[in-house]
Length: 250
Image (cartoon, rainbow, N blue to C red):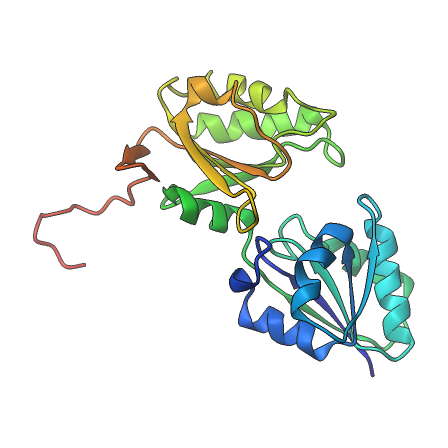
């Protein structure tokens, strides 16, 4: 019986792939994914068969994975970050209903999502509760995204924003910041992490009033702190609440 692995490859560089993800890709004969992600993993897995499709062809990649496995080949379907966080796992399982008698074993392999990798670059912004919200309205109506932003901002919870901008929606981060500013101080500490784990990696710490006019793109993850978040020696830190120096046990 053939097997399909749905593999989150993390931020993009080999060093930040999990050992489990590497082993899954080593065990497969065929690796399938978006062209950019195939380009990231191909140098490290010689001898494999690589199949790729352009952006917005996710359903095609899922069906291609099934067809390849039905041909008797262990297959990996790769996506960036974590396979189950804005990744391919959910869509794959939905499309799997089209193959009820395939007899194919499926294993979902988690990876490091952008919230984790970006936070590590910035310092420690996610030490308390936080929301992760995608600003892409390709699959979710903007009206629903706005409701989520209002709810998150009103609760004084750290926000992590995925997909903050693209060529077709350049103003989404500004609109999100304007919503948050209804509840938070303009001096709220914020951070951006761009191209995490890839060439051109960079970070920036700023205030909420500055963030709304900061250039970002689809490779950027945005962090908006809560009322306790601070900047410490160039790092973005949301205190966990420990009483430092009170003599208590840690």
